[in-house]
Length: 74
Image (cartoon, rainbow, N blue to C red; front, side):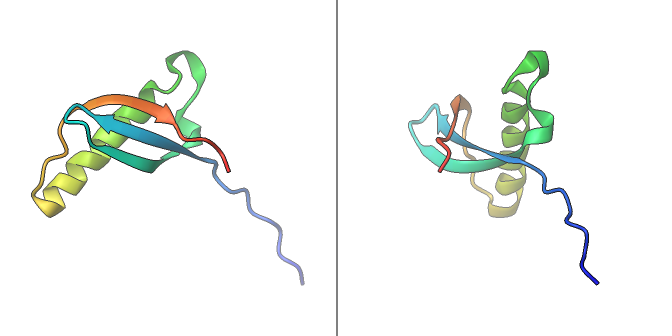
């Protein structure tokens, strides 16, 4: 018997530039938190939370975020 296809959650990719000049590419953010009046602002909050988790595991700080830009789609 064939399975019913499941709905995949949309993932939006962001390029993040930090104040010290470093950059990370293709940071993943669920599309469900984006949109509305805030636009991409919730993405910055989520990426900052991800950075705090990475810092807790690695012991190295990423610094403050300077800008967030959506990565071009493939």
